[in-house]
Length: 423
Ligand SMILES: Cc1cc2nc3c(=O)[nH]c(=O)nc-3n(C[C@H](O)[C@H](O)[C@H](O)COP(=O)(O)OP(=O)(O)OC[C@H]3O[C@@H](n4cnc5c(N)ncnc54)[C@H](O)[C@@H]3O)c2cc1C
Image 1 (tube, rainbow, N blue to C red):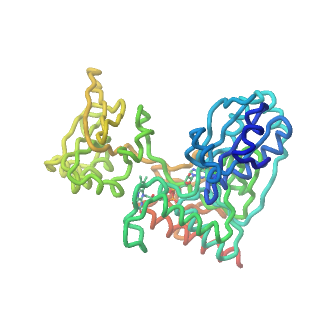
Image 2 (cartoon, rainbow, N blue to C red):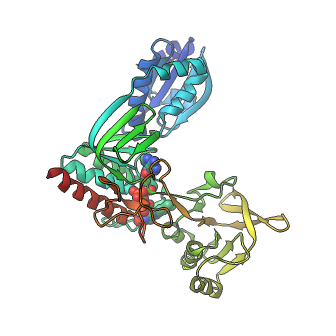
Image 3 (cartoon, rainbow, N blue to C red):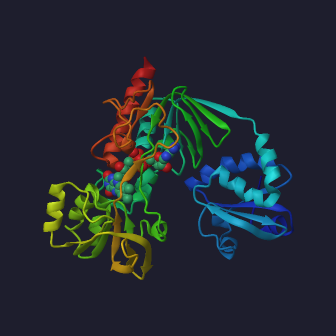
C-alpha cells in the first residue's frame, strides 16, 4: 500500500493498471475502521492491484475535481479510467471485494478468498453492538482493565448517531446533535483502549461456545458476550422512505415531534404506538392525519377513544402508503385506497411511521429466552438464560427504551461481569 498526493496522482493512477484509491482524512472514525481492511487486502492482492491512499485534506483540489466530498471515499480505476462504483461511509470488507471483482473478476476473487488464513482473537468480553448500551459497557470494562472488543455491523453510535437532536440526555444544557453525542461516547470508550471491530459482517454467533465469526475469516473468542444490538424500525419499504429518513420521515415521536410545532403531519399505523404517539404529537402539531390499512384501529379502546376525541387528529382508513417525495419543504405521501386501488396525495410537513420495531437478533437468537415480542429476557444483572451471555439496551424485554436506560443496562452488565472476572 502506498500514500500518494496530487503531485504524483497522474503517474500513479492515470497511467494504467488496476488501482484502488482511498481518499481519507484525519480524525475520521470510518477512515480508521477502513484502514486495517484496506491494508490486509493490499497484502492479499499483491502485484495484481495497486492499493493507494491519498490524504483528502491536503489534496482538496484533486478531491473536488473527482467530486469526492466525504471521507473515506474509495474509487476503483482501470487503465486510467474510473470504473464500477464508489464506496463511502462505514465500508465493509465484503463491499471492497465487490469493487475489486470488477477489476480482477470473480475467479481471482474466489482464489484470493480461499487463500485467506482464518484467525482467532481472544478477549474477555465481546460486545455485539456499539450503540449507547454497548459503548457504556465497553467504557466500564476498559476502566476495570478488562479486555473487551466492541463489534458492530455499522459504525459506533447506534440510533443516536442518526438522531437529529437529543434534548433529554443529562449533562448538557442545550440539545445536542445526535451525531456529536454518539461521537463523544464512542471516542471516550475508544480512548480508554477498547478494541473496535466496526463496519464488519457478523457472519455467525455461537453463544454457547462464545465464538463470533466476523467477515467470514476472523473468530472472536470471548469468555463472556454482551448482546447490545438494539432494534430497527419496521419499514414500509416503499419508494422515498429510505432517502427521506431523518429528513422529514421519522420513527420516533419523543425525539422529533417538537420540531413540528403548528405544522401538519401524517402518521402511518393504527396500533398502540401509532395512536399513542399521534396523541403526543398533537401537543405540537396543528393537524395529524392517521393513515391505517384496516377499517378499524388496532390500538386499545382507551387510546382509541382519546384519539377520536382529539380535534387535531383525522383518520384515513383502508389506505396504504405507496411512496414519499419531497417538494421544497413539504412531504408528499402517496396513498392507495385498498378496495378501489385509487391513489391520492397528502401534503404535509412530516411523516411519522409506527408500524412496529424489531429486535436485531437475526444471527444470534438461538437458545436465547425471548419474550412474546421477540426481545431478550434478562435478569437484574442483565444476564440471559445462557451462561456468560448478557443482554442490554433496546434489544432486551423492557418497558422504556431510551439512551439513559440503555446506558444504565450497559453499566450494570459491565459491573456484574467485572465482579465475576475478578473473582
Ligand atoms: C429516530 C430515533 C430517535 C431517538 N431519539 C431519542 C432521544 O431523543 N432520546 C433518547 O433517550 N432516546 C432516543 N431514542 C431511543 C434511543 O436511541 C435508544 O433507546 C438507544 O439508542 C438504545 O441503545 P442501544 O445501545 O440499546 O441500541 P442502538 O442504539 O440501537 O445500537 C445498536 C447497535 O448495534 C448494532 N448492531 C445491530 N445488529 C448487530 C449485529 N448483528 N452485530 C453487531 N452489531 C449489531 C447497530 O449497528 C447499532 O450500532 C431514539 C430512537 C430513534 C429510533
